[in-house]
Image (cartoon, rainbow, N blue to C red; front, side, top):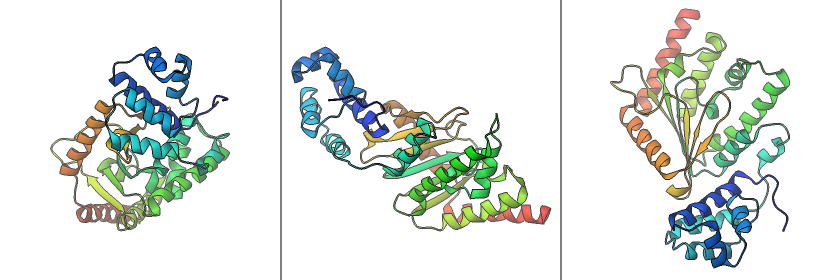
Length: 287
């Protein structure tokens, strides 16, 4: 069987979970290979997502590694059975793999939570606001790249705007006040954010400046929920990419951060009132 030259994020995640099963059992690759009757190289290829794994092989590996987590095994079996190409694959020749990975994992998410401190969450940005954010990249992006990223962003937003994937956005007050392209664009973005917050499946919670302590890190992050907690993923925004993390300790840490965020953020209705007050302030100052 030919090796996959570019395994998808889901294929790589299946492999990573197989590796985690093996390591938790205390087995080396050679030990598992002997148990399965394959070569160590084949075990490595499965764990890297370079070669496919049947549901039968998955269950054989789980049994060999004494994994009794049936919910996880069933979820992985369902992932193995997925067929078809995602819409993001059309962008593979033009965009980086990390951007494609984010779209893929969002499309399969059971729920999504974000925290942003520098800008409105990307999945809720208006076209004008998003274009102004992209235009401030250093070094500057050519207009063709901005247009490409805009089209990609609008496709990603369908996950939230369809109402099928529950979405919670914790937005720091700093992000509500940050201007990327002047007061008019910001005011329109905030009005759209209010409307989105009233949509089914979308929750917007403001984290104001005056809370006693800010829980968690200072970077923007997204927590993508899977069918079981073990298949959750955290994505962090940095200047040169959007890395993904799925180690159990990391997931537990960010779940705690989100729980604390929920305890200090304003309620949904109070958040809408807060955003309206900022819009009123902008329009009175610049209207």
